[in-house]
Image (cartoon, rainbow, N blue to C red; front, side, top):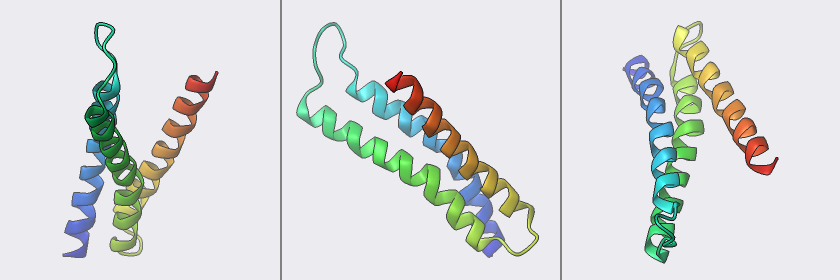
Length: 95
């Protein structure tokens, strides 16, 4: 049961980039119109959900997976990829 839950969390991690894209597209001005406060709030909620899923799902999957499970390796890889993505996006947006 715990392994199945960990497997579902590992797969659910794939939805994080979709949520992050939804946050970006929601807050993007189209044809010179700035997003409304409601759209900005929705974008913030989507961004927080993406961050929680990107980091929380693999950590929870890692704790649920048994010792020596391949799911632990996959969950650790997912956290590493999420950290690398945040660093790359942050350095590109700042630089």
